[in-house]
Length: 117
Image (cartoon, rainbow, N blue to C red; front, side, top):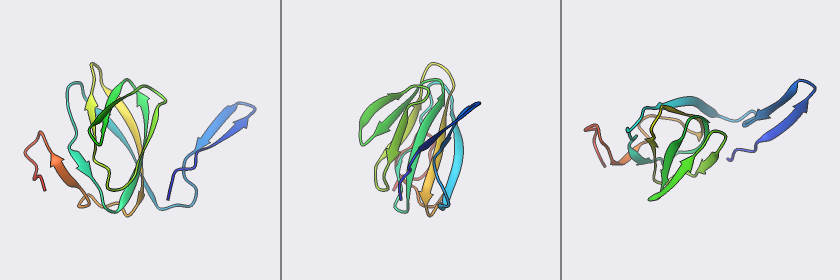
């Protein structure tokens, strides 16, 4: 599965469609300044991220990428990834494709004392 973004122009503006008839889970992640999510990977799902507010740092397989509003990333299953908060609160639209299960998280690093596998 993959995100196939479609942009449709309308007389009032446009809409962007990210999934169509696919099994997906959609979340908005709010990342507070100076915080980090687990450095994690998943076996059963891919993730699409779009920065919708502020600036958030994505770490993808040990590479830091600054995400500005409107920037997008595709994270294939098995890829190590995390988000890091900047100077202000940021938000990421996350669309997970595949079998979404909170137990499908392998934590490689964690700042909050959760088990690292």
